[in-house]
Image (tube, rainbow, N blue to C red):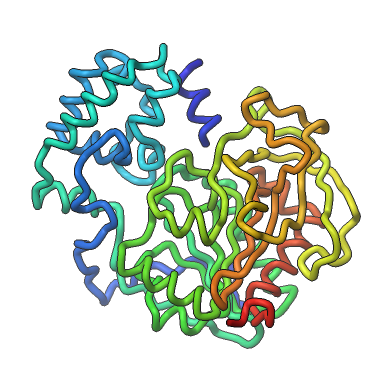
Length: 377
């Protein structure tokens, strides 16, 4: 299997309160980032591949142990400036399953891991690791009435600009139709308590790659658990490797396994499960064409309210991606006093023109943006 194919498998309007993406205000100087999550973590085969690639000693150790299968990796996997796919894969993930050639000897990977862990993590290494994060003091403010929605677009991993743009345009259109006050930012520095306090919910628009510093992580977690809302769209749960357990296990409640290729986009039948405010008015089943995700475990096991499932017989995923008769594709749940909705729908721009999906997204934002008595503690 080629590395490119493996990677595929792994992987404004001012009216009505809508604004274009917020960039850092030039009058402010961005603070240097020193508290990125893995700044001091030992190098290992479970480090983001980008961190190995930007450290000459770590890169040399990997090349010595893995040889041409490492030095010959496709450029798609070896970028060293975010956004890059190397931020969402690890050496273990790339080599342990044989995606880059024959499966590697576990003893070789163990030896490589030990050698990487023996390397020092210097102050210069910490600066290099943190360079893809930001503390830029972006200060987006809602400008109207209705729900206050913050759309977040800082992407350090895989960036599909068409998907991100289509989702943003759709959300801005829905905001105009429904009277929401929406702002868009691609700055991690916007994820801080005083900014989040102005909003009813945040939308993670195809976020890929670890995007928040430790301080920003705490701000988001505390805000959601104390009553904030979260909507995750498609790639917000589409990374082969993730580095924030709370986000994957508790907020989204599912870990990405893969999606079909050849063809990547397939028509499939979606089935709406029961009655719920998020799916009100939708037909019992309908067909869409998209890049259909599978997950490592069924999120239903985490107690989520599944809203839509896929009929696998309608799109024929490969055997290693089959979840069976119960294949959730959209769900919601409480996170403390907060509310979280996730939909794996939304890779091709055409998905955001689908009337059924637009209705689901509208109602998901409305649900996530308002207190739900079932989430009170």
